[in-house]
Image (cartoon, rainbow, N blue to C red; front, side):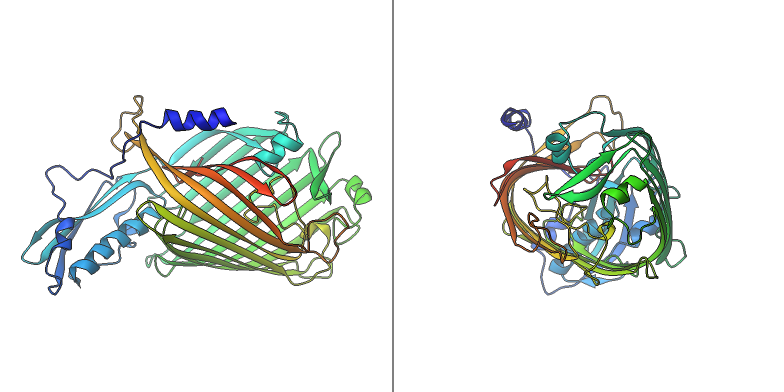
Length: 476
């Protein structure tokens, strides 16, 4: 692992600073003149010119711009508006680069140019994914077995009609079998505020976790398929502006397991049946006021979700989760991220099916990758201090296009500290629930286009465990 770490630093050590989208031919960026302009004189937005959007509808981009032609701003306020426009257009996830600048300034009238570089939206890609929760569990608990992978074909189009609508189809084989279909149209009406999405997933598993023993998932594998799972949902979305998003969702789940599961864990389902069917409804409120959602350096965002799973005696669980992220810029190259997530499931007497908490999804502590902690209520808090090291720009010789002629990789050194707590009324003696769990560590984050973030972390926990962990996120 140390060799890999050193290799990354030496290989990218010759990096140079990445420049933003180049200005259009013959254009001059007058934005810097705003810093020396008379602060008591307002500047009028005379015109707004857009270029680079070959597929994306212009009105989808203009929707994210916080100013209009004819608006007046003092120089400092206009500089802030240009920066805000860039952040909000980037957060549509439609572009790999955005440049918003004043291209002409005459007699107090400004011409604003918006140059965008569109992503590639259509991808038929091979699918290869581990079946375990994370890389560390697969590597340490399952000995890195290549038998525990899913493979297949992943097809997605992230801008089908040019209105930021997304289509994805997954055909997966291997350890499990899975079919996934999803379509999301966030701007279905003329006001560009109302949208919808539909999703369907069907899967069959050859192995599954039936219980938590010694703070780790206990698995069982039988000949043939041990679990069959089907889930479908429809969602209504409302987005009144660039910051707020509201979603109301209705879903239906059918989950069937082999009777061996209930023999090993009679508390797995809420009833003694091997099949479980239920509807669930949820309401979700999101707020984004950050510079870049996948990797914020400044700003604040939150996600509040209220969900009711089932509506009868067999399954009826109301849960509330609140997730927040604060990012503060300390200086040019230093910033801090504070991420908090809390979950409450209203009934403490939940079956095992509903008790999964720490170690699943975004509810995890760095340094506890090998463990899961069940519970009906809990929180985590992750604090990370970052220092930007450098940006390396790769010029792919095999790509002959102006939009992808430069691929930047920005490197950030980090130190972090996490703390979490999970309450479990049905705690066993060796469980890590009902106690505070602190962890700490150092790491390196690599950020690139398509919201790609690769994390290398070396962490410690209170039980004496230490080691590397790897995480990734992005469109791929």
